[in-house]
Amino acid sequence: MFEQLTGRLQGTLRKLRGSAKIDEASFGEAARELRLALLEADVHFGVVKDFLAAVKEKALGEDVAGSLTPGQQVIKIVNDELVNVLGGEQQELRFTGSTPHVVLIVGLQGAGKTTTVGKLGVWLRRHGRSPFLVSVDVHRPAAREQLARLGETTGLPVWESPSDDPVARTRDAIAEARRRGDDVVVVDTAGRLHVDDAMMEEMQRVAAVAEPESILYVCDSMVGQDAVQAATAFAEALPIDGHILTKLDGDSRGGAALSVAAVTGRPIYFAGVGEKVDDLEVFHPDRIAGRILGMGDVLTLIEKVQDQVDIEATEGLEKRARRGELTLDDFKSQLQQIRKMGSMSKLMELLPGASNTPGLAQMAPDEAELTRIQAIIDSMTLVERSKPKIINGSRRKRIAAGSGTTVQEVNRLLKRFAQSKKLMKKLSKRGRRNAPWANLPGF
Image (cartoon, rainbow, N blue to C red; front, side):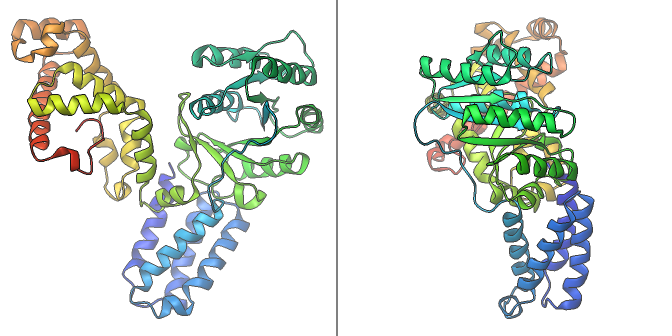
């Protein structure tokens, strides 16, 4: 995420960090590099101009001039202004009045709108809501089928109707949600390859019937300034409340993220950070600014751990670790909990300083390696998992053949497990409960 922009900004700010004095000349050089980095990232030129003007005004002010660490102060100013560009305070969906509440999802075709509807439904359910999904896209043949499959995959209810009138489908879905007792209706509207009057008129008719509590524009972050132009057109036709950025995990530049909120004046509510239905995160401007500047995002990492880790299972693991009774089933269980949080390389990117350590993210095991490890454990008998010491040469050959791996890979896993077992026992004896990593899986 934002690799290109992060690399350029960090190189510029590194020069400022140790500066004993910030004057017109030194800031001017840094400003030119900042401007070039932001424009190369496809950030809207107006946003770049306003951003640099705000940074300059504060960087050359008396507070920085009189500071003992002016370089550090300027970096803080850049961080604060990035937060402002990204929308300032984090925004939450708010539901008031009678149910069902309606959330209208709009956007261009190909931005990931239908997938986002499924992800938002999963997020709402995880936060205590009862979502009901409906597609009113009667133009794209596969739109309704795609949402229906997402409903089957996630276990979310999806309204289906023989009607080909988007207004009627919207009205019927809201009535059905009210009958069922579902409290949020998420409406997937039709998209086009480009903005046109017919699409806008149709969405306005749907909005008039739905009376939505929120209208969210799905913005493809990979498109850059074009996404901002489309978002502006939608905001002129509809009372857009905010945005959902998609494909943010594949966006190395960051142009859309750094432009859409500032240009439209509407905040970013969520960001899609992967292809799985759980890969939708609340958008925190301060945390994203930290990631862009290479400061990491520890709060998001902690939230992922708290959301995915089974605390009771972890406490049981701790007790067994203290007694030296860990098994390969425990190892597999922890592996599964880690995988729920996303890829290891993405998790490591959230650590402070990760972007300054070349190859750190690549050191983490990839999904293919984690799959092989799980396949090896699954190919063992229950006795072998509980007593790995009995796994001799012939058993290793059988396990390798059963898992589609090699004997060498089986040997590496057994060696890694033995080392982990010793380490966890040692940590437990030292008072693991008080350690800062106490609730992280794998320790």
